[in-house]
Image (cartoon, rainbow, N blue to C red; front, side, top):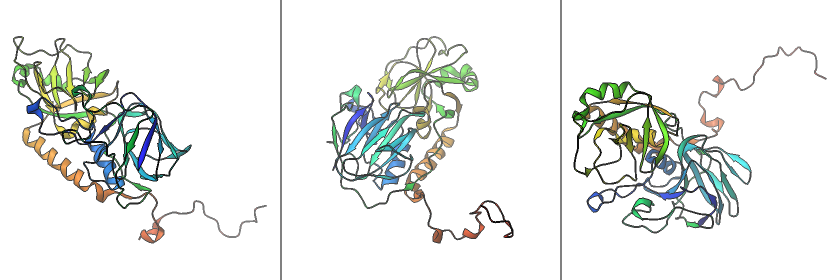
Length: 336
């Protein structure tokens, strides 16, 4: 079973949940930039949550099924069609052998995820199928690549799922980080500032621009390089915040003003250039509660999948719906 790439954007890669536990070897976790979208797609096609999918960055692609497949698209809002017929996102659909799937450029968000029932089963390297290009693991896909897929679990098409809103920026929760105390007199201003995700960014991180003055550690702080993780907000030499993402380095010497809590990172990753964001400092207890709620949400996703079209027999309050608009008396003249 396989899927052939006919065309795709330059950032298209295979991604799963990444490689946790490899920091001591100088390798960050990597994996899907929006891990919530990865879990949503897995639920739609019946895959385990750690199955690999295709990550599409802003641009779409064109793909041909070499066998009958069942797929779903999650994450960024991207139009898709099968042999010219439109197909809704966040809905499982069939791609018959020889059929061609077209995915357009993102209309909102950055990262789209194409999931295949059975998952993409490219060879594992260091326990993951994820491409980690800065580390030299895997590669960006190109026209002509053929992707093997695993045995598909039982499942139906036209199953849908309502995604968590996260494509339009908004409020991002952060906790104080290792050097936050050196920005103590600027944390209030940081929280009051409206930032714009600018055009400088990739899977390693994104830069936050604002109209006000930059941020600087008290006393021109100099620190030795130390461990950094996705979500850390480094303040570069010009005072601009830079939020680290999945493929970030493992150590860094820029001071960190704060750290985005992991469950809010999908909102950062999906912020397209020009998106407005604000940051709010929360307590560690609040962050842990938010992470626990996020874990429960991920676990519950398979139970939230439902048929896109409901059979009348499955609607107990069917008589409460207005199925026909307009009312007649029955005495109107016959329409010619």
